[in-house]
Length: 386
Image (tube, rainbow, N blue to C red):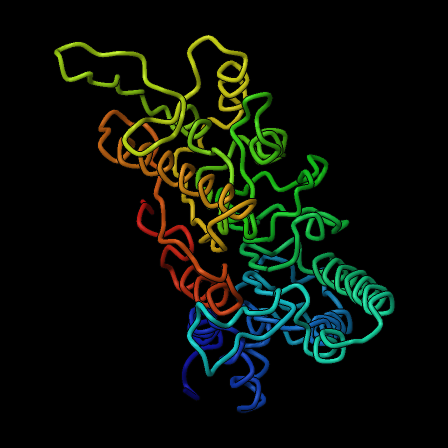
């Protein structure tokens, strides 16, 4: 080790610092030389949990001045250079360690910050509870925005359970960001935010995704109006419970409609109703089909889509019964389009329907997918990576 040049050590440390930050911290505790050589990549990949950690990490980076003379010219940069953060996971809570991953999110993750949740969940005063939660939410949003403002120029991967409008509030552009996991806030991703390299998106909490009998869903319009519409190639929507996304996805992925065989040697136009065995599709020539085609044309590279449904449970009557029937119809339509897309060999897009989740996409799964992705695997975009 003593005879190894700094440049070689730097390359080794760069490859090693691809975890939640533990390797970088361990290297900083070794010799003065190792600490100096590894410092620029000490925070190459970091997992941050809770508002307090976000603020602490921001303070660490804020107190480290940038040496403009070093820039990108050499392999090795001195201890005075600002360390580059390339892969970041930021969550309002830590994953629970003593339960299965699918069960670690009994409480909503956006309310699960360790500094507040214990006091707020059982708070007897509802008005005070709502005020405290709103104050915490704004504090968390401001903390995340402050952190992203510092690391945005070097950030390549961002996984968070914060809403993506909180991410979009960062005043700095994301020129290198290629992969984003965030919560669906039902608000547009502002086109003013430069993130033109983004190719992979995963939205959590997409409970209701419509293809649109009257209009195309906000999800599709939002993506089509974004700054990354020409680069987006891989999309995953998790926690989907209601809607009819299969109709739009048939258009987006260019999956032809198979005519319904009547059994007497003839065929008929397929039904639009997504019942088991029947394809989900727009009726030809309708305004909905035209709008979907126009939207799909604005997302030319989006040819790989994953949908993870969230199980709809409840009593078998009234409102719950209607929602369970709607959930079943949605799954039938998605399954039909997915099966047909996976049989195509002409370059059409592919839809993957993942196993239903009982409790939703939790922090444990977020962490596992992030570690998988920065380690070179598929992460949440599993099964179809080229």
